[in-house]
Image (cartoon, rainbow, N blue to C red; front, side, top):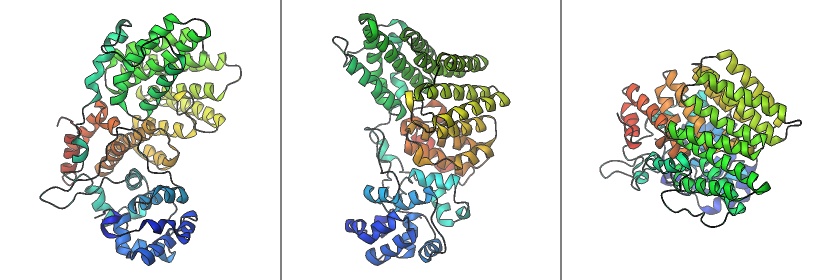
Length: 490
C-alpha cells in the first residue's frame, strides 16, 4: 500500500541541492535519481516503490536502465511520491505544487483512533495516470490496492472539520440584484464614486475566482459588484460608460455561469440576459460574442437545444463578418462560440453538426496557435480536445472520450475549472464503459483539483450518487463514503 516518502525514506533537504541530483533531474534520468536515493538516503528499491506506487521489480528495471520513464503522469507520480520540493520539480520540468484557492483545504488523511492510518489522497497526476495511461501496470497489485483503497473512512475528515457548506445556500443574494437592479442585501466594498480601475480589477478577480472554482467566496462579493456596475453604467458617459458596460457584461457572464453550476436556471437566465444587454450597450462585437456564449449555455440548461445551436452558430458567423481581420481575442471568442454550439448539437444528438462545428473550432484553434485564455475563454488547441472528450461522452462514445483524454497533456491546462471538467467527463466516460473503479478515481481527482466543482455542483454530486448506487461490491463502501462526505443523498 502506498504511503508518503517520509514514512519509509528520510530524504534530507540537502539531497535535492546536490549537483549530481540536479543533473539527474535536469536530464530526467529517473534511474540515476533512484540510485542517488539509495546512496544518500539509504532507500531500498521496495521503499522507493512504495513511495512512488510501483513494484520493486519496476524500480529495479528503471535503475538498471531496462525501462525508461517517459510519460508526464509517471514523472508527476514520482515527484509527488518523493515529496519533491518545488525547485526540484521545476528542474525536472514539472509545475510547482500550488493550490488555486486561498481557501483551499488539505485533503490529507487523518489516522482514525482504532485503525491504521488511511492513505493520503493521491496526487492528481497519479490518479489520472491510473485512469488514462501506463497500461502495462494495470494489474500491478501495488497500484490496484492504491486504486481501490483511496477513500478510507477518514480521508476527508480534516477538510470537513471546517465545515464544507454548499455555495448554493447563498444563491438568493443574486435575486434582488438581477430582478431589477436593486441594491444588494448587505453593503459591498464598492461604495463611493465609480472608479474604473477598481471596477476592472474586481471583475478580473471574479473571472479568476470562477476559473479557479472558488465559488463560495465569489458568491459573496459578486452581487454587490453587479449593483455597483449597474450604478456606474448609469453615472458615467462617453468611452468610460462603454467600457463599464463591457465590464458589466463580463460580470453578469460570471454570475450566469456560477448560477448554472448551482442549478438555479431562473436566475441564470436573468444574469445571461443582463450580460447580453450590457454587451450590446458596449457596442463591442467581441463582447457581444462573448455574452452569446453564456446565452447559449443557459438555453442548453433548459434543453432548448436547437435554439442554443442557432444562437452559437449565428453569433459566431456574425462575429466573423463584423471583424475584418481577427485579433487573437476575437478568434478566441469565435472558436469558443463554435465549441459551445458543438456541445449543444451533441446534446441534441446531432452528431454530424457537432463534428462539423468541432472541425471549425479546431481550425480556429490552429490559427490561434495556442491556449491563451484570452477573453476568459481558455480557447486553443488543447481546449478543443477537452470539448472533444465532452462531446464524445455525450454521444455515448466512451472509448473515444478516453482515447482523446489520454492524449491531453495536463501540464498545459492552466485553468482549474477546465482541468476539473476533464476529470469529470472522464469519470462519465468510464461509468458509461462500466469501469466503476476508474470512474471513482477520476472523480476523486476532480475533487482534489477543485473541491467546490465537485462538492458544490448538484450535477456532479448526482454523478457521484450514480456511481455509489451502481458500484460493484469491492468499491461500494468507498464510493458510498465519498458520496456521504460530499453531502450527496443516497
